[in-house]
Image (tube, rainbow, N blue to C red; front, side, top):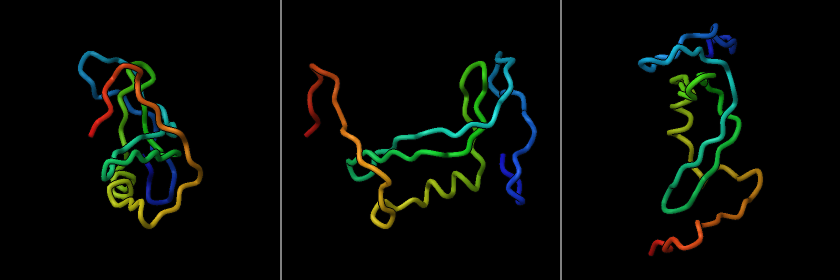
Length: 91
């Protein structure tokens, strides 16, 4: 997690039951659906278990994600969105 001075806390044990892994700091990419439109956010600081992949976000990062407004922010780039062949397109 990020400390007030911007430094990451030390590695911590994974909180998942029966997982004996430890988290490591990584930047992740997450996709949201807002108003029916996909939004991809890159560069999210997170702690990710090296064994099971369980992801932990700092509360400040979570607050920033929840406050993200795609009508105010401008995308860095655009990407095509595909649907799995044979699956119906939602109305």
